[in-house]
Length: 366
Ligand SMILES: *Cc1c(COP(=O)(O)O)cnc(C)c1O
Image 1 (tube, rainbow, N blue to C red):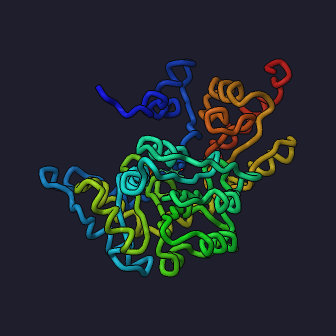
Image 2: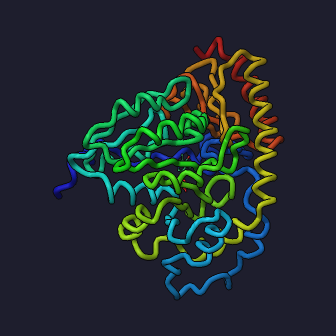
């Protein structure tokens, strides 16, 4: 086979351990998964009410235009229907962008560490990837500007950033956009948008009218609690959406996913509830970190990047033995830290207890 050369140096995505795997490995009954930033409160009740075998006609192809979901979101965001693109999760939209704009002779700029899929798909397409280190968990936008050259095709911004949780400040974002040439696509991945409570946050949808090269990514996988359904969407000027739409496969989002996402989108009270509960629980992580002298990043998402008293791999393993699945910073480019999804009050009670044990044993684990 004549595989693309770059595939030899890459490997498939390794998912975090599943609940079933951990149960079997450690002989545990109760496992709490705080590793993938899923919504600990599940999804809106309206979704579950809709979930019946009659929900869709299984023999019929999905609506490739995603008409109903499109109308619902467009009217809520006060944009045109042709300013939206749907994907099988925002993951697929990242693939579509890379396919449409990246290839040999082009380069792309990303932060490091950030969501790894931007780099992954850029490499597969043969593009050069320029990685700009975060400064205190934040994007170094001046560093991004310096890295731009004639071959730069796509810039990826993640806000709040995964895995630090930091939000790009609005004045910095607009100052940055003013300086980026219009021929470069700026992707603003807002997978955690629904969780943002920063009072300085201004809705970024406004930006697509002024900056025709900005594409915002949002998803139903996090706050909406629908990760299993795989629905994400992009918001941008029609001049961006049309070529991306040409690139995507025609029936990329399933009928069931479209129908349930539409129901979920309408339940604003559920999102509001999750945002409030998430924030209240996150405050406990800040208090805990302060009490124990551990560094924690300033998060506007539903997870925290928390310092650990031993190596990240050891800490992750020790927490796992107690039934808590978290993500090791060694796998995320943040050694010495773990990324923890903020759980429910009860889940967090247990997590802090497990972490207490980790702190007590830290001396002998080093
Ligand atoms: C979880 C996540 C995604 C992927 O979302 P899907 O819509 O489930 O594909 C995209 N970007 C970031 C930053 C994420 O954390």
